[in-house]
View 1 (cartoon, rainbow, N blue to C red):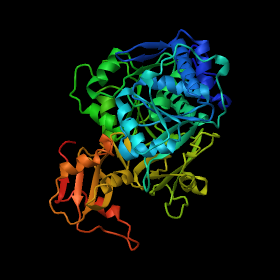
View 2 (tube, helix red, strand yellow; view 1 turned 180 degrees about the vertical axis):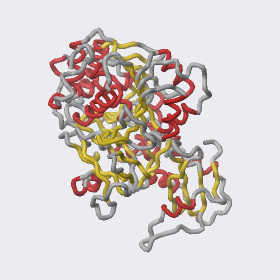
View 3 (tube, one colour; view 1 turned 90 degrees about the horizontal axis):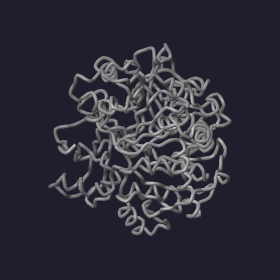
View 4 (tube, rainbow, N blue to C red; view 1 turned 135 degrees about the horizontal axis):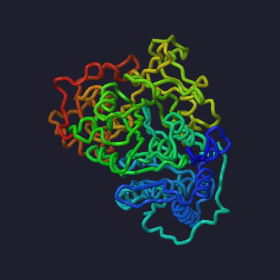
Length: 526
């Protein structure tokens, strides 16, 4: 690969060097003056800026007595600070535990406990809430506001730890189903393989510009997009929060060529009123997970985007399925990224392969050593359960067609996906069960009003103890203490009795089939 097309660190064919600290350090040394990041309404950074600012943060971590093998938990929305502490952790050999900034209450408490960090680094707007939560539960954790951590010194480059492919460098929490959310431990090679997938499947080059509007506390934003830019020299243009009304303006103003989105984001964009500028841009490639057929047609026809690629993946398993640039997705996920992954469709009960065209569970495993998660942080039994019979079980139902294309059908597990976020039905239920007069709760997904592409809405069914007059708005206010905004239910149904199995388990499949009934209350604020 020649420098004319790539500023690629070493070579994407050389996994021996798939270590984040080594990649960033090498790129900064080779191309110090190259502008690599521009923040919308903010500064521009060269590779040299990136290195110096990250070394300043690394010195702060050193003075906090953080050492190789320690964890640092962060609750930071500002991408400038987030990026620098992420790189600083990689330089120090410290595992970077990134928490979704929308998480609150007991869910946040669970994630802080699970992360086992000596320090939790938070943005000013979250400091008081996190501090009071930790004090209330008497956790032995120091809460730090990054604004109070100023340092003019920088870490000596000789102290940078390059590490190994197998080193866990990041943890990101993903939705739980039968239990609390789980921390996915991500080795160096796993993180870098997210970026390699983007580089190879999007044909990303140094003359491209990547628009990042997804949160960096998710693997899509941080690894598939930002790290891919760092590895190729493509410029990353970062907006702190996604804005449907500004999406096209940004694409045009910054000469964007590539971007990623989620199904809900695609729906918000296509819902914007058409303008005379819809095709007046340089956007060539959109990757989206999921990618329903209708938004795909709109991006191709109304916006004139040549390549609109579906994706399938998870934080745990990377992106094992990509759409092809020379074909329509038509609601499918794409084909196997066979260079690095194996994917099968298996009977969810027998765990044996099913024939093409039949529905089963999507199971995945990597060909690249350490190209997957290494496990769930502090939950070894969940790790073993998910990896049974030497395949990772995604909990998603799918079909493999004879052509080799994969189709996502539905979720097998009780995980709800709303507006790009995975929501734990368990954690929604626990938020309601905190209320004394609620005896039982079942949270589940209901198809959104917009139909295909709008993902799920959250519905919860409740059993109430000796209380007939329910103020549903008041009920929701009580649950907001423990639920992120995106997890607040749109529908609530009070039950006389739950459909249950002989062993007493609530049959959520029957509740889903019944859908929004006459006695269902709807939250008009969503």
